[in-house]
Length: 131
Length: 343
Image (cartoon, rainbow over the protein chains, first blue to last red):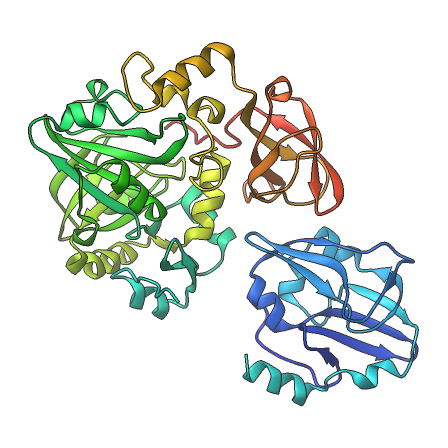
């Protein structure tokens, strides 16, 4: 069952429709409700390898719906410490719960100050309003 | 900037919350509830597609049969009045300008239902035809319960005109693009909304172009612009069955020679063994390329069509698809991926 539109206010957002939940020097990353809705039913997540590096603004994986492929852009830089195996097995989890069970990876941040450069929920909502 | 054309059902699609996308110059619904749900509705019950964007060409009068026989690949002598036929319009290199359904309405009277994107090219190649697309709205009702829910009886590839369907005067044809039983209904654009509403009232699910693509790919029906094109011949595409090589039509010499010598490449169906979804334009590492790909809702794996060198084009041959830089294993399979159970 597809989730209702929401943008939690405890997350930070990247303009490419990715979110980050920062806890100390770890961040959990995923795609926003808007991104999963634009894609439609997600049928495949191509994850990065554990231990690989991700860089802000660069692609670290792919989410794929029946019709389209979209690169997932890293909102923050760091090293991948965990890949969500549930979304690899059941990619539709991203549609069902984009901010919960549908998270994609956890990274160890290379710069703990970098999250401050991301959008807060108000700024992200403004960006969406302009789309 | 080109303005997108809209079918008479545009307002209905918008009201149903369809995702509308540009397709062949038209603004068309790609999905309503979701491609997977719509796909399963057609495989298990019934779905309706607005295919009013398709073009309709007419030719009638003395010499019409001879004219088409010289330009279309299939043999019109194989069908009687009241029957429809899958056929190809070829160029002088044997390439496929379009694939279409020809309806034989009389001994010298035909209606051609053609791909929206190719109406112009068809018209260029068939100067004697009249473009009557504006006079037709078209709905495809497909699925094991489609005919029963409509109260229509029609045999595959038969058609009848002036049939009342749910109160609307229609051309009813036993054709489709999904591999299921069902029909296509042609009516006046003025009646399209009434027909659409009556069809939905029968519990038939609205379905978009997304499900149309996954459904046709599971049964390996080629899509012009993807799997067949003016650069590919029917022999390469496995459509020799729709070519009467014993009659003369545009490009037949090339096709006879190619059939004799064997084509360098053939269109095959393949299923992924590794994770990932093949897509149009991806390279086959051993040679050739993917022309269509999707995740099969029925099989739950990536499936595709593509051209590979003839020496590889046998079922059970392993091939490698270049998935955006990642080599992924796939296996050529016998067409189709899915076949409906005979009832």
